[in-house]
Length: 514
Image (cartoon, rainbow, N blue to C red; front, top):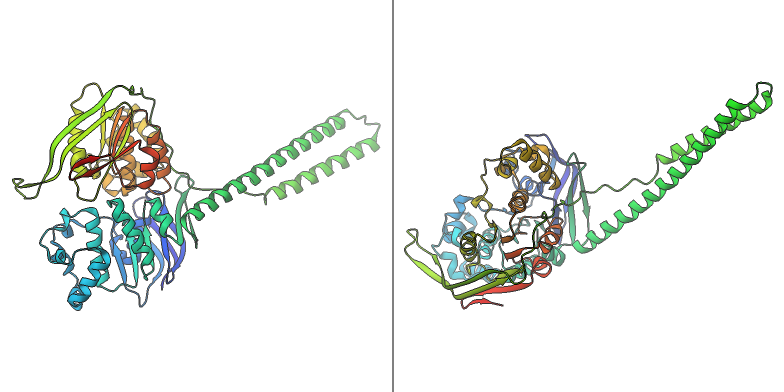
């Protein structure tokens, strides 16, 4: 059993406490989802559980992490570059346990994970694999070590819908307890039976955590209902308190007026008024004491608040894109001289403020196509385009701070960007951190602000929801659904597709299929 006792985690740089006195254990059969807003320490917690050395550069901790007799299998959010450069065979044989398995056992493992056995011995590098293939290869290597508990950090990233469904079944059917982070609400709804919710209250000064045996939907629904009930009770009690306070104030003023007006020749009346005032103050003191035990207004970490600024609608008849491509090719050799064709006869016509989505299997060329569309649209003078790549480093300077990246350097611009970042739940310290120190979700928020402040009327979004928490994603979806311009997106987020997109195209070898 993995057990955590009185764990407190704090940042070394700004001394912000991420977790305080955290207690938790994982039992056989647990499929435990770790949720919380971006930057709240979810990935840090997984790293500490697996190997504290992975996080010791930027956090310190107190408490106990007990896993005697357990073998932990850890899947990081991002593969190290050193691993990306390895071939599949080199990557798998990097663990000595590879040689402890027979050929039949290896074949059985590949079948279980839906990975061709012959690919296990392939010389192709990990870095060129699709998102789904990368996940499966990493899981094969983890399972070779016969782990007793799995720790998975965003395993749903970069997966097509088919592989997402496969991952759901893998988690559901696994006999191992699993502690995992995922932004994908549908996956959480279909797999989790236990929730750990990490929050940062009062402008990220007060950490709080909740551990509950529940599926995701019921947890969110019960939490919302509880907060609504508590808030209503608190407000009712405060209204009653205000009424009583007003009543006491009127009585006190009346008695004080009578005391000032009473004749000195009426000592009996003065004594009665003094007694009356004493009773009023006694009642008030008693009521004040009762107020100390009144229902408190609920405290919860609100999702970020943002919406695109006012923009002119793109008219329905305006042609945003009329694009044709005979063949979609990608290079397969380091010298870029050799390429393969992924799709043919691609046609895409977008008119007015349409919101379209492109789906397809991992590796079918969606991101390549998006880059081509971004280049094509950037040459237009009658529209303004903003592009959110899947890999944020294509646009973000990791050594810049969010404020420096977003502002033009003027005092007014810096102040405005700080306000915007504050609405995205950035602390003052986080605004001043270089972006390499931010979480994937925080980088995604910076990208979102970049889109907003660019004044664009056409958005190109490559997996826009991949790094946002399941608590932030509903806000993102509403924001994008209300965007009055055109959106061209790539996504496998089933809720995003349903709530934001008017049309869905599938990229196949034969082109885009509506």
